Amino acid sequence: MVHVFEGDIVGPRILGKAVGLHPALSLVALIAGAELFGIWGAVLAAPLAGLIQALLIAIWQNWRETHPEQFPNAAEGVPEIVETVEVVSAPIHPANDAGASGSAQAERKEKEEILE
Image (tube, rainbow, N blue to C red; front, side, top):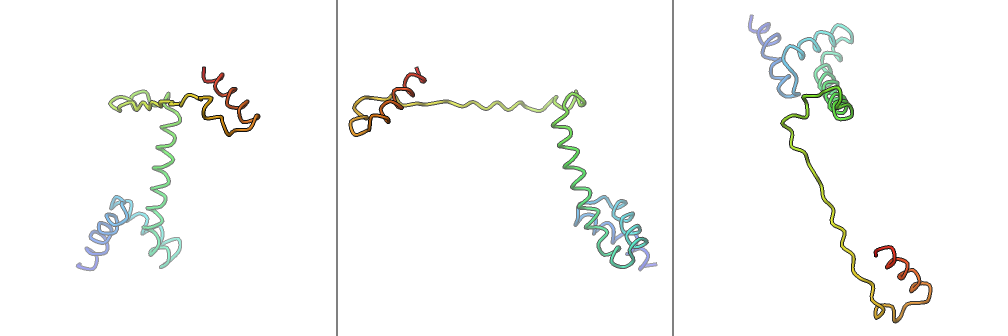
């Protein structure tokens, strides 16, 4: 009885919490891994199930972000992040061009005209 209790109830709970799986999913993965691949399937079932779960969650979140029209209520309650960028440019003074070559001076004049 103790072995069955430990193997069927306590083990999947501990393993599920360590990997982040629901205990039922952990138990199903353990049974499927053992039936399909023997002892190595049982040993690697929970980590593999955790990896598959993480991949599916990442794919789902990416899908929700790239297809917001399919999830109209998903944006409610989420604050909108607005990023502002301030462009600061220093004026170009002729005094700074004293040691510059002719082509460098022409480039600076072009930049000055663009900024104005």
